[in-house]
Image 1 (tube, rainbow, N blue to C red):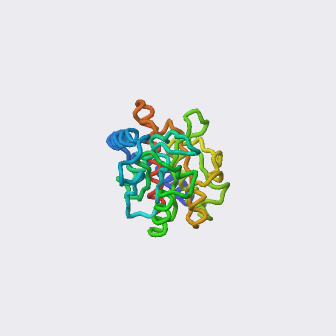
Image 2 (spheres, rainbow, N blue to C red):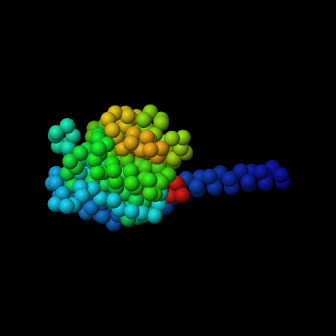
Image 3 (cartoon, rainbow, N blue to C red):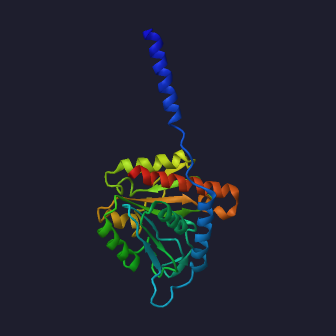
Length: 246
């Protein structure tokens, strides 16, 4: 009888563990359509200076204390030349704000000063005001990587310093991305330690931050169905990460 109960318990435990691997999908086609529509606005303005008396970035507040930034959502000027945007990062931030009410800071027009290369600009000053006000538990700085990169995502962490002891947050982000098919993960290919990056800026303010370099194949849903699925997987991973934090 004891042996029978033992195997019954073992079978039930195994079933429970296996069941816990499965979660209901939380991203629908409508969210991907929204991302495509949001991105049209970014792409239409990405090389245009802002209208007179307007800002070249936008802060959308939220009730949660996970902040997402997209400093290359539009083109930026660096060393006198215009650098191309990290397409898809701005629209990704906006949909995260819509779905999870996280605060986001994104560029919206041509940036006269690259916010991930220089500190002396209005974007960084606004970022400083935001983090001083809301005191985020972590900042995720969104970037796009060339689609030929061998990784799905690369984590820039100042070689392990930028999350300031909150390795649990880093592990959670890595886990959710991996669980949603972004399994090929690189660490510090772009470490965020060169130039005046967002990550370095926040590290110096004692705010945990991770520079998340995303292969652009996951940021191009308008390219076709397989790319839409990749974007949905990325979005779902970040939504679940936000929930994990809470």
